[in-house]
Image (cartoon, rainbow, N blue to C red):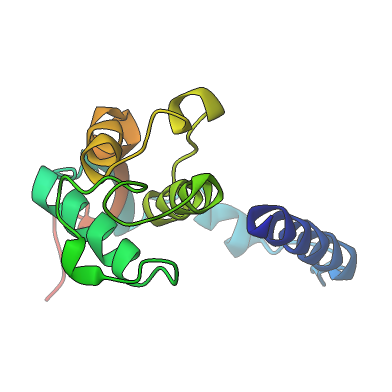
Length: 156
């Protein structure tokens, strides 16, 4: 429900931005120096590097899920929250509340849990196991840019 509203607002915002983009003023003819600079080597060039983050470990995932449940309105007794707490038996959540918790976990970890797997998540430890089993939960590829001095004889 919340996800649908969020997606609709994002789509409408992107349409409005796309419609408002205007023309860019460009010179009618390029000068000789400007065209020459395309072929001249630059003193600094951007280098693209990739690296994988260390990923999420079990205590971090457990902590984030427990914090999420502490802030959930339907959890009346936060002292019952443990890494093995069952959503219905220990926390008193009904099936609709469990669906809301799974959706909140999806948002927290930026993943999408298919309905079949979501039906099997009924406790904190099952949620932790699912998150750690996902490739997105283990590591995320990050892209870094660095400027490298390519000039062999810098003038100082």
